[in-house]
Image (tube, rainbow, N blue to C red; front, side, top):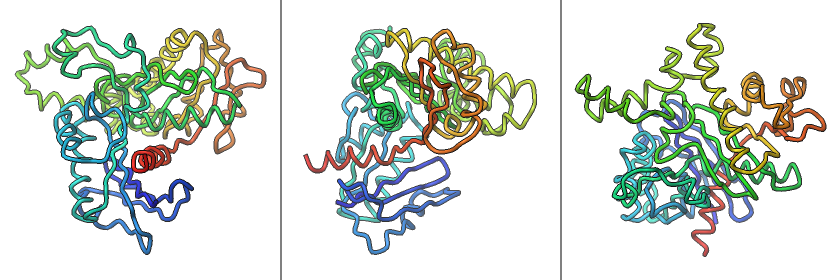
Length: 358
């Protein structure tokens, strides 16, 4: 079975075709500076390769869709219902579903939702202290970046020869962390929406909701205006004043506000590692991935500094040099620290293949 796996970014479209279950790459491509997803999808070049199904890394469709599903009108309706919780993500995938139906009529579309990996979280980690009606309408912690955290859990286990008590740190333009025991998610930083948890490039991270109500009443802002500000002007961009909030730009800026933004970010990562060590009853490995986590030696060092009491010791030479998947902790350190490339598309392909063949 040949699966087309598109990865839809905010301004890019990467894709590959995998032959399953052999997991053999038959074709791949990338389109940059995408402003019209319908046009971009119509330009996907599959060559002579027959596409049997399309598998999307979908984000948020509420409590009924914490798994992998063939897209039908129920899935589409749920994506629309939870559009306010994940406006940037769900809007792209709703457009993509329509565009693929037009470009490849009759080809089944599968949605592998990101909360699937976090379905193993215990109730005490998943529930919020909100009114009962809110709980009944699906307000709870879902967690996202599930495909990445699942891949990192499997890759770390393969490298270490065991399933460790692991903190997976997916750090990039969008960032989240996950506590993993025996290969299963037991807690994660993103909650009801991808807005929560760590500061992201332009999304705010954890925030007292009453501050939002205060600002709305003070300035007579609409929900849409607040949503726009917190999704596009918050996070590292808001803290630093550096448009876009890219960590590379913050490191190059050299301003006090940019330095403070990085301090806020690394503090939250460090604090969460400690919290997850407590939640897991120990800590055996930390894995850094994503554009920042995999590639920024300086950030890995800052996130781990001060955690020596937990057994975390980075080797400066290993951390600063080398490439590919590797261990960057000191020899003999009780906690292994890894720098890894993630592969969300592979996890999506495996889930979609199981969904279509079960």
